[in-house]
Length: 211
Ligand code: MN
Image (cartoon, rainbow, N blue to C red):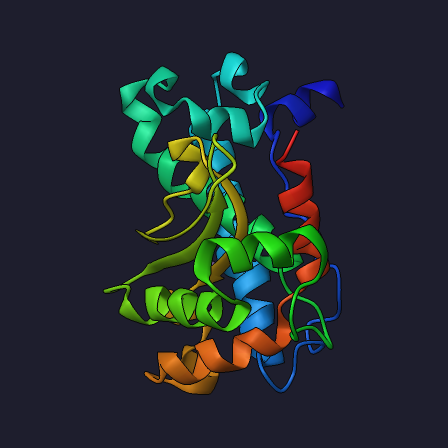
């Protein structure tokens, strides 16, 4: 099956918990559609875009997104949108867990305090980035090449990797992420989402990103 695998190098990662595990904060139907339809479509369209480009198919998703200039112009927008969507959602699912929330601990907690003044101040600034995003996009906590933490808001499916930044924590504020349960009330979704943040996953990404 080498041929088939090389033609479809990217695959939908399994959700690491049940579809209803994030209830009541994120509802089961939203999770089923978001993971099984939206994320699956990004994966499928990325694989379609890369069809016939074995050099690009051989790259990791991270490597592909870090050098979009090397992607032929004809498929660059497809790779950017669908590769970014695949990358962002892959981070998003593991950034969440049932019975999550609370405050981080360890080196990440210290770094957030140093960068933003306090964990509460970080949470407020991150929420403001999410709520202030006009239209579809993401709020991110990222680590840059100098090991500095920052909050970013980025439109569409732009991935921090496209800017050579390491994504630690991402919040999807596309309407598909919350509309079924929260309708237009994005701010309520953002408040609820803090209850499912998987700080262990964010901490692991932070520590792994620091050589
Ligand atoms: Mn999404």
